[in-house]
Image 1 (cartoon, one colour):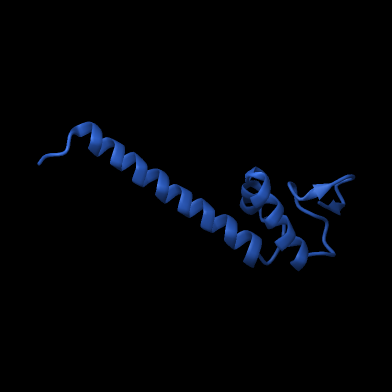
Image 2 (tube, rainbow, N blue to C red):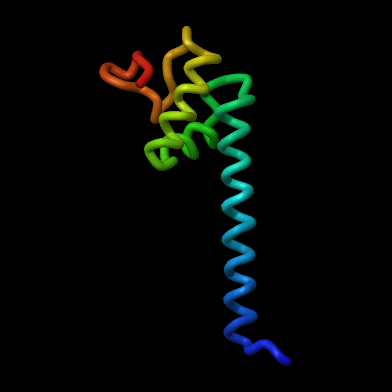
Length: 84
């Protein structure tokens, strides 16, 4: 049985979206759990745009490892010098 062209296109799009999601998710996880600095630009951007619960978890991980640092964008509260 042959697959229709629309089904093939949908499959390609879904695989592409899944691959991008996995890549971005891994990059974000590596930033919040293994970064040598809390100020990596791509990691800051990914974490600041993450949904609320993921952002809070990521900020908590960063704060645990870099408590004495000024929090990066997306993890700052109040005057920008306090962690959320």
